Structures are given as structure tokens and as C-alpha cells.
Length: 205
Length: 381
Image 1 (cartoon, each protein chain N blue to C red):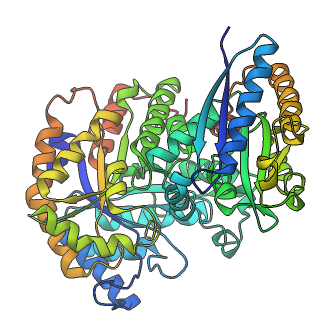
Image 2: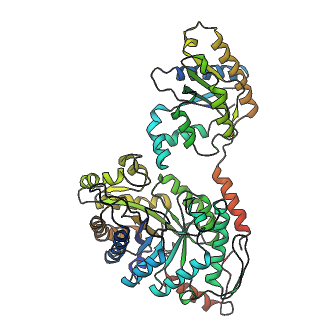
Image 3: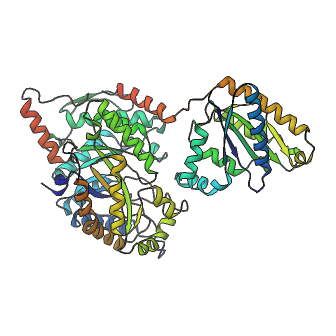
């Protein structure tokens, strides 16, 4: 059996990053859930902080450097994505949004995605529902029903806390979604464009 | 036989025609100065032994070449040998009848030193300025080009389409020189549909090449070659490929880097973005000695195969005319002669040479000689 390829996109800025911490815990939980159901997980991480300059180069000039291209490829070949961002000003961070703004069209079409966010207080938790979920829906991803928000306070509470429960439940939902969707065949926007041109040429003579 | 026919490849330059402040002096040329500089650059290109001069077409500041055949007609009158082309002619927003007329006249004036590179254009607002709808960009490309081909090939055209008023009993005047239509290149930055269009008609594909990593160009050229064969025009390696490139040279490579960096950093399109080092690592841009330019350019063949036309962008981003003319001297004296020689090494004899009016005329005569009863043989598979 081949393992489910998970790509974890994480937009934390500091070291250590609570965003990366949440991403790690979601990945571990999803892996455990997949294994429990008889599958395996093969996780790859895309950290956005080191890609900050390349993302902006791509935004301004369309130029995609090697590191950013490799991140695009890692997302494109995934069977599922876990995407985690810090909450900034009632939304995702600009860096997180910019990565998905320059990611080639159709990369996330039909992609199961588990979303997560971190923030200073739990008052920002609806950023998941009001910012992340609509963006991923717009990109034609299949967004897992339960999203996970972790406030600074959550990391201080004992294990077995509410956060741990939210992570386990969300990971269980996501694992079922991944299994239901199965291994994913990537889509190329270019293929659809080509089909259009071939159709037009067929009637061009 | 000119030098490009001897080696199969053409070398030349293409200009965008931007009016940009020189970052070293802060001086912005006037539109008039920029247009006159373009003419001087084209004349120098011929003097330096290059084969092709191509101008862009833009309809908004800070660009000046809005009327390419006017510019090329003037250059035709001042030159003897160089082929005049475009980079690109907008097939979407120009009326195909007018394109056919303009290039037909240019062919006659230049004695056949004319071909044309078609592009869709990527500036949205231009479409309504010419009465077109950007949502129809792809259908416009296909319909306009289908009509253009017929105007150049058929004496009397009855035509009906969806996006232009129909034609009844229309005859293009003047007819193409020697009844040989200008060779057509289709240009693309990264659009695979353009490769499909070029392959369908057996036309040339010009990959802009300069903004994108080599892998994009490689994938598009491979697609084009594969589809060229699919549509029955020959084997993949017989398809007609052109590439863009971009260079800045000084004898000492560090001098080239130091002098070019402010132009790179402030250039339209890619300025204020990736570093000069990143950009040179992943795109055809070479900033260095003539030997480095030769080495990098020869490397293009490793990922697109033997090809027919190499055009360099030499005059943008505010580079002063004097510098551009020096660059063209270096290109003509030290780079292109070596490229001609080296690209000819190992080039299979059945890879076609870059098409010219003379070669197309010869092919037409050969075909007529072998098929005396079928003067109007079908062009489209």
C-alpha cells in the first residue's frame, strides 16, 4: 500500500513558532488516525517564512525561483494538505495569502485540506471560518469540516485539554475525508486550455 | 546564399520599445528620441552582421512602437539585407485584413525581407481600444488567424466568421510578393495553446524564454514539436523554433555585472523583484563576457533541440543608445560568428534552416514543378 502524501503548509514567522507547533500536532494526529484506519501517511513540510522573498518576486514579476517551484510541486503532488497560519488583523497573514495567490491555478482543485490557525487569544478563532474556509472553497479544495484554532493559552494547558481533543477530532474527520477521496491525480489548467484550442482549431478551416 | 542559410540559424534582436529613464543618469528620452534610437539600433544590427530585427507592438505609454509596419517600412528603406519582423503583432486586436495589407506592402518595399510574429497580447485594456472583447481572446486568435492565412493565399476571399463582419469577393491588394505569404511565427511566454496553434498550421513557434525558467520553455517547445508531428508537418525535430534571449556584455565580466545591475534592478517587468544572480541562474539572461554569452546560448540547444532563430533583447530598461550600439558591435563581432559555427556542428542535415522569402519561394517553385496541375495545393492538413 502506498502512503497518503500529506503536504503541510505552515506560515509561522518566529522560531519556535506556535503555528508550526500546531501544524506538527495536526500532522501527528492525522498520521495516527490514518494508521488506525489501516493507511499510512507520508508528510512533507512547506515552511513559508524562508520563501518570503521568492513569493514576493513571483507576485511582482511572475518569476518563480527554484525553491518556490519546489514548494509548488510539493503541494501539487499531495493527496491532502494541512494549512496553518497565524491570525493577523482578523484574517490570515499576508504571507500565507500571498503563497496561495501565486500558487498555480487548479493546484488545490479537489484537494482535501485541513485548516488551522493560531493567535494570541481565542477571540480570533472565527478567522478559520471567515477567512481560511472561504478562500480554500474558492480554490475548489475540499475543506475538512472541523478546523482547529490554538490560542497561546491553549499551549499552556495540560495534555488531554480541550485543544488536544479538538486536534484529535479534526484529524479523525480529515483522515476519513482523505480515505474517501483516495490518492489524487493532479489537474493541469494547461490541459483544459489546450482542449479548448484543439476544439477551436477543429472548426477553424 | 547568406550566412543564415549556410548555417541554418538566424540571429537577431527584438525590441520592446519602452521609454524608460536611464537609472544611471535619471534622463528619460523623448518619444522622438526613442523612435530614432530604434532606427539607429536596427541599422547597427544590419551593420553588425545580424539577420533579424523585430519590433514589439504596444498601444500605451511608456512604449512607442504602436505602428510597427510604419517603423519597419522606414527601416527597410535604410537597410539592404536584414529581415524585418515583429515581436509581436497582435492578432487579437488588429484587423486581419489590415495586417494582411500592411505586411504585404512591407514585403514589396523590403524585397521579401519580411516575416511576422503573432501574439495575443497580455494587456487587457487594449482590447476595447480596438473594439474587441478580451473574453474572446482565444477565439479571436483562431478566427483572425484563419482569415489572415486565406487573405494571403487566395485571390478572392469569401469569408464568414463570428467575430468580424463577413467578406464577399475580397481581394487583397497588393498580393504577397511572388505570391509567397510572409512566414509566420507564433509567440508565447507560457501559453501552451499557442504551441498547439503553431503546430496545427506548421508555422514557427517563438518562445519568449526570457521571463521564465528554462523548464517552462522546454515543456512548451516539446509540446509544439510533438503536435507538429501529430498534424503531419514532419518529424518533431523538423519543427521551426525560435527563442528569445537577453544579454549584457563587457570584455571583463565583473564590469558587465557592475554596469548592468542598476538597469536590471529598475527594469520594467522584472525590476524590484528577483536578484540579478537568481535571474541569471534560472533564465537565459547572461551578464558577463562574450565568452559567457556564447557558452550559455549554446546551452539552449540542450533543452529545445536544434532550432532556427535566436533573438536577443538588447535595448530596454533605459540603456543609453551608445551602450546599446556597443553591445551590438560585441554581439556581431565576437558572439554571433562563434554561435553560427558552433550551432552548425552536429546539426542534422534534415533539420530545416530558418525560413526566408527565398527559401519559401524555392519550395513553392519545387512544389509547382512536381505538381503542374495543382497550383493551389491545400495548406491545412
